[in-house]
Image (cartoon, rainbow, N blue to C red; front, side, top):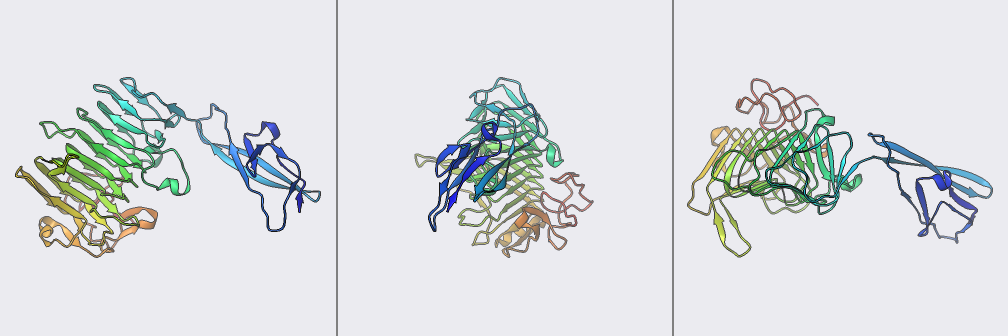
Length: 399
């Protein structure tokens, strides 16, 4: 069999390049195929910058001529203009808006006494190995509408790239960083979602997470050492390590949060791990006081042991736990006081549809109307809570 020709309809002006058995070009002459043989055809697209702020369609067609008959195979691809960020240290008082997405080529730093402010709807796409380091302050203030949320994720998109952990570094708050606030933010597919290491003598939160979603992280969704953190209406889901790991003491408050580690595969650590200690690289154990408040929070996962909550005490420093009206996958009956609900039955929690990453409780969930009124009037999605709030980041509503 002989294909008489292969060509791009757009010719030399096409943004596409055709590869035939590894050879690039816009048009090719006769291609001989032996019985049982095949041709490997690949396409590469190079899109020039435009002033268009929204995704745009790059269309062409592959023209195949066989026995005098021409067939036309449509080619469609989407382009998106973006701003490339490659400087290592950002200018002080930097503001990023949603006009165009940002491609973070390599790790960047918000320096001491400097602030990076990110506006609603802004999208940040990180290349492999790129971190956002914060020594100063990060203010990422989105809004409840999906198109107004702020997105931090890897730059490759589609298929497995949308849920694969570890495709970029994460957001790291370094010692001295303070007054950080992330509101209506989505952080996905990093080594660690947020890592906080800001020891100081006070208990004022150095990071506030409000109505955030942290999903598909390699080490942990929230990893903190001897730090002060407040999380409200925040979902942490499907991490290969713990959803939340707060180590070496610190002051942590979680109100109306959902930790749901239901990803397939092996996991040895619980969804929520709180400890007054950490073992350093030299083998030395560091301990510090731990103060933890968990209220109206779901802690769930598919760990084989059925125990997704661990509070580990190794030192003699103060160790304070306040657990009220939580729904916890655990066999530890001592957790039942304070209005907490426990079970090891995996389906006990009754999320609406975990296959679609919907962690809102269904009508029969024990989380419904089982919370304590904390004065948090809206849930993660911006929906109003009723007078008897549900446990978790999301209030029940009909599917």
